[in-house]
Length: 216
Image (spheres, rainbow, N blue to C red):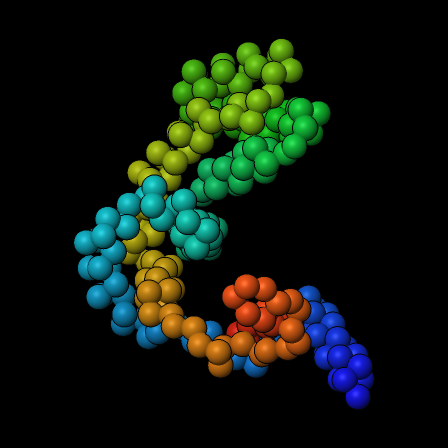
């Protein structure tokens, strides 16, 4: 009987694991509910007090970057090619081999730098341009090859669209998520608990699935 129970527990656990991989968060049994947009007022004061309403602090967070990108793509009246340029550079920086970086570096140079130069819209310093050109000619593709451009991209975004972002609904959404983050309290009710997957000095370890995301 004990063996049968163990088998059933294994099956239940494996089904939950498979479900967590295939089931989108939207179908999960428990949804994340954001606070009312009116929370922006109090959260803005809190974030100002803690020094969080700075371009560098917001842009360096995944949430902040995605909302700023959403603003640039869908709200900002002015074109904002810096975001795509920045994403291409970050993709380049994550590449593991020099061969991969060389291919990506040349792609970035052709699509993000040369195209703008031909259109006379390359609004970056001569030093940054020459730094990349000089290293590409030598096939010297260190992960920080485009760092001078990253500095300038961030400065342009900070000066061009950041203030408008702070006045937009996208920043309201940022405040809602930050309020949720500050007030989030997890309990056992936030998880579906499955079989024991191990035992140790601190007790038994159970497989659990988060109710709002469906992830194990």
